Image (cartoon, rainbow, N blue to C red; front, top):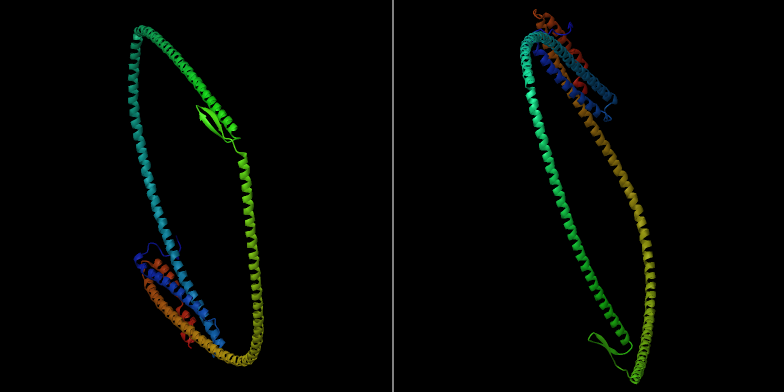
Length: 463
C-alpha cells in the first residue's frame, strides 16, 4: 500500500486519536445543525410566498428573498463539505482497516503454513509407526497360521483313523431311526382311522335325531292345520246362520231369539186400519200447522212493509232538511269568502307598498355593510401581511445571526486544529505520517472569511 495520501499504519495511535475524533464529532454535529438550518430556511421561504403589505416595495421583498436563497445555497454547500469530510475520514478508516486485515491474513497464512508443516511431520511419523506395528502384527499372525496349519493336519490324520468306527455307528443309528419312524407312522395312521370312524358314527346319530325331530314337527303342523280348518268351518257356518236369520226377520216386526244355538223368529202382526187413521190424522195436523205459519209470515211481512215505509218517509224529510241547511250554509260561506277576498286584496296592496319601502331600506343597509366589511377585510389583510412580513424578517435575521455565530465558531476550531497540525509537523520521528495527517487536516479547514462574507448580514432583514 504505497498511497502517499494515507497516514502510515505504524504511526503512534495515541497522538492521532484526539483531533480526528473531535473533528468527526464536530462534523456530525455540523451536519445536523446545517440540516436544521436548511429546514428553517425552506420553511422561511414558504412563509414569504404571500403578497407584500401596503407601504413595502416588491423589489425590497424580492431582494430579501434572494438573500435567503443565497444563504440556503451557502448552507447546502457547507453541509455538502461536512459530509465530504465525514466520507473522506470513513474512506481513510476503511483503507486502514483493509491494511490491518491484509496483515492479519498474512500472519494467519504464515501460522497456517507452519501448522501444516508440523501436521505433515506428525503424519509421516505416525505412518512410520503404523508400518512398524503392522509388520510386527503380520509376523505374529504368520507364526499363528503355521501353528494352526500343523494342528489341522494332525487333527485330519486322527479323523481319518476314526472314520471306520464312526461309519459302523452311523449305519446302526440310521437303521434304528428308520424302524422308529415306521412305528410312529403306523400309530398315526391307526389313530386317524379311529377318529374318522368316530366322526362317521356321530354324523349318523345326529342325522337320525334330525329326521325324528322333523317328523314330529310335521305331525304337529298337520294337527294344528286340521284344528284351524275345523274352527274356520264352525265360524263360517255360524255367520251363515245369523245372516239367514237376519234376512228372514228384516221384512216384518220380528224378534230374533237364540235358543240352544238356534235362531227363532217371534213375529208380531200389524193393524193396517189403525195405521191409515194415524197417517190421515198426521196429515191434517201438518196442514193446520202450515196454515198458521203462513198467516204469521204474511202478518210479519206486512208489518215490515209498514215500518219500512215509515222509515223511508222519515229519511226523506231529514234529507230535505239537510239539503236546506247545506244550501243556506253554502250561501253564507260564499258571502264570507267574498268578504275575506276583499280584505286580502287590501292587505296585499298595503304589504306591497311596505315591501317596496323595506327593500329600499335593506338595499341601503346592505350597501353600507358591504363597504364597512370591505374596509375591515382590507385592514385585517394588511395587518396580517404586515405581521407575516415582520415575522419572517425577524426569523430570517435570527437564522442569519445563528449562521454567523456557527461559522465563526467553526473558524475558531479550524484555527486551533491548524495550529496543532503546525506544531506536530515539527516532530521528526513521524514525519511522513504527520505530513499526510496535516494534509488531510488542512483539507478540513474551511474558507471562513469567504463564508462569513458570502452570508447575508442580519441587518439586511431589519424592519
